[in-house]
Length: 386
Length: 249
Ligand SMILES: Cc1cc2nc3c(=O)[nH]c(=O)nc-3n(C[C@H](O)[C@H](O)[C@H](O)COP(=O)(O)OP(=O)(O)OC[C@H]3O[C@@H](n4cnc5c(N)ncnc54)[C@H](O)[C@@H]3O)c2cc1C
Image 1 (spheres, rainbow over the protein chains, first blue to last red):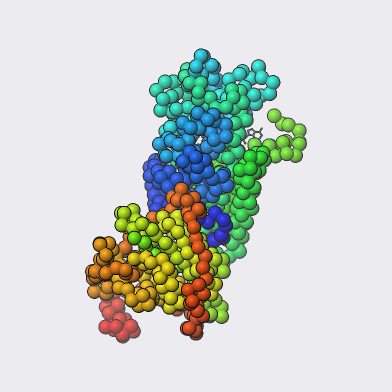
Image 2 (spheres, rainbow over the protein chains, first blue to last red):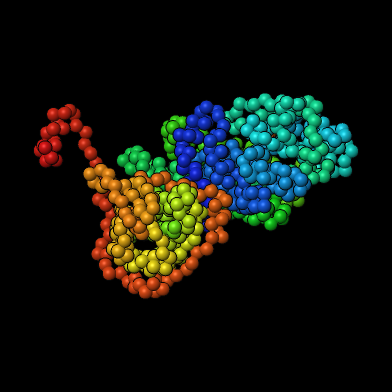
């Protein structure tokens, strides 16, 4: 395995040691059975990793997004898929930074102890796609309750989470000055909601991602579950979205190292025409290129995390890190599959599984095109196209 | 009761070792270093004794460069209480390590020292035995089971012919074999706690030990490459080859 040492070595070593108890066969079986890696997520929770971002006074370890990104990177690098558990990491600061004292006091110790999971975030809707401010799910206040109606799609880990952060419109679009106003976020008690107006419909998909359609039919939630101020939800949800982008960048980086490690080992051993295929520059260069791009993406990831942890604006960096990392891991995945030849397609080598898993990140949580458009219009000041 | 656990920073067991081109040793530049796996087993055993209420304090000590502090931190994150780093930059031979450890034992007064049976870098398998001799303590080497009694410790040893159990009077030296236990991985809260645990820094001279090597490494060689095998058509050919070519029948 490639080795370079950084100041997170203790975290890396400990996560690697835990992941080593869940070898390739484990993740392969979970994928084959379209199951949820319950034992793995449980072990991560018990060893305190899923509470890394929770402040120490609430029973967590009070670490920053940088360390969280290293944890996610190592999970993917070890052959796992952080997609099963990254939700709690990217949601955490939304609750820590914008939740009320009562909400923090009530939820954080339980999440830190592993009694509750906060793994879901409900943003995407079928009819609005990436145009988030146009979402049609509404929350209307009635006394001490909000009544939710609408529909979401691709909402992940709902069947394996206790809590979900939900984005809904509280003031109609026509009545707000800026389209990003009038949106609010809520903590939804999933088990409760399923009994009183929320329907969960799993979506079978290309990767083994537990993801669902959600339907809200007069779901009532107590006003105490509103996070922050009504109407300001879009600003709060960005705390989660930026974290998500930086963390997914890290996961892609972990994938990238996994592909590089595997393909490097394979092409050294595989002999064709009387010599290792890795002796051909046509084989070497795409592998080297993928590796260079992963290393570069990793630097942008650290920059995004640094800004995030300092509480500074980091939208551009988080998006760019995710763009670079998703692209790099895809290049590395492609080289890995290509140079495994036919064996790359055999489930037994895990390459095809990781290949599928890493492909997701050019589309979710935000597609490559939308990042390019954000950079073009918001950073370079080009005319708005939408 | 106090337990002392010496830990060594060695080349990681996953690393494919390369011999330096001048044969003076193995290449350590940019190579992953970790705690000697047998020492992890010693640390684990000490922690289990503490969890069973039989031990009050676990002190880990490493003789090595500044970076050996990370190895001590790893032991602290597993559950040891405090550390001592005896800073030495060059290679330290087992006898010098044993003399330094004797100095620490004199100061710390543990009743039990658990060491790895050997370090996976030089495979010496000497330090524990030398320490026992220097201290005049009883020793139970290659332990695959350890039972702590009142003033005694029973050690099941892995020997060539099978297993042997010895009963030692404390204070005693035990060296850990592979099957003694399976070491735990550190949890995040324990890694955070370990950052706050104390590590004392000492020099070999604090214990009056001269670490200058007494042995000279003459050569270091790669193991010979394995020869390709041959396929035989049938049992008759196999027997004939074993008889006439390999000369083993
Ligand atoms: C496995 C999985 C898990 C997910 N989990 C979650 C979750 O937990 N929570 C959640 O809220 N969402 C989740 N999502 C949703 C995900 O964030 C969206 O799929 C993603 O943001 C893209 O939105 P969309 O699917 O509506 O695509 P669309 O917005 O319909 O876009 C389709 C394509 O058109 C392109 N496009 C659209 N507009 C433009 C334009 N103006 N210029 C150029 N190109 C454009 C896009 O780049 C994209 O390639 C998940 C998705 C998947 C597949």
